[in-house]
Length: 200
Ligand code: SF4
Ligand code: SF4
Image (cartoon, rainbow, N blue to C red; front, side, top):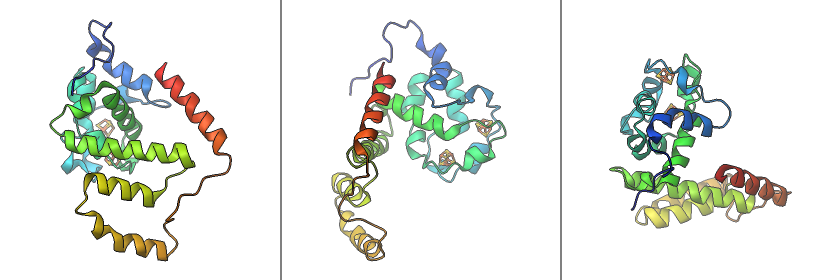
């Protein structure tokens, strides 16, 4: 895939990478407060599968390694458990930064031009399907999401998931058909506006 520069007009965008990641993060990222203690990586249940621990990733961002950071599989491996966030001595909003990096990686195209592109692309597809669910129904429709994702990316594994799905359905933990929330039109209007603000 051809990689698109984030801002072709900017002669040296790497110098402003930390600032940019912070600005794109919802609320306050506190990324500049990171003291590189490593508590986040040591607390993370998924760090063994990450190509860079959160601490390393934040050092790369600070050093302006834009491409390397946006090609990393770390944000895609993160499961948003918030374990690192509650243990970070500097109150860095690590999980929120991971969401920002995912969004930036997709917009720049780097996520698919990475040694971990299979992981990154599969996870990005899952995020895309989740967002479609929320746009359409106002909530996640797990049965549809799992079926579409499994058939697309892991077709041979899909039949093995059926017993678990049936077990959840029998205990009323899974809806076979999607259910729209009340007031979906208002939510769709909010999401549309948020999308416009993010793009502009
Ligand atoms: S725990 Fe917080 S301060 Fe320590 S390396 Fe991670 S983000 Fe930085
Ligand atoms: S939120 Fe993400 S980075 Fe933090 S501990 Fe959980 S999986 Fe690891």
